[in-house]
Length: 110
Image (cartoon, rainbow, N blue to C red; front, side, top):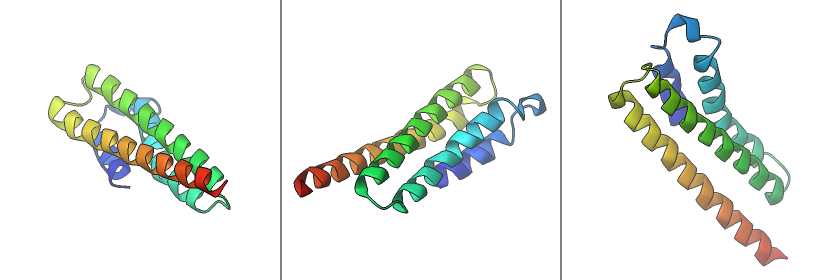
């Protein structure tokens, strides 16, 4: 949730002509991360939860790519980009760890 909130705040400074472009894409991808985690937690099986965590991880990768593009286009200064990119990487690492843990748990149940 923190990453999504920070992305929303950072994109508030993007050019107006990007409201339906990169701003919208970045916000949707960032919001998808916690949304997919929550949806997965509400599913009935660990396997479904893992699938939703994988979707969240994919959305996180999308956010990383779009942040880099935003920096290259001059919409984000390095001082704003660096903490967002680090936060995005940390979310990815946490998701990877949770996915691996759940996969081990599934194998142990089999």
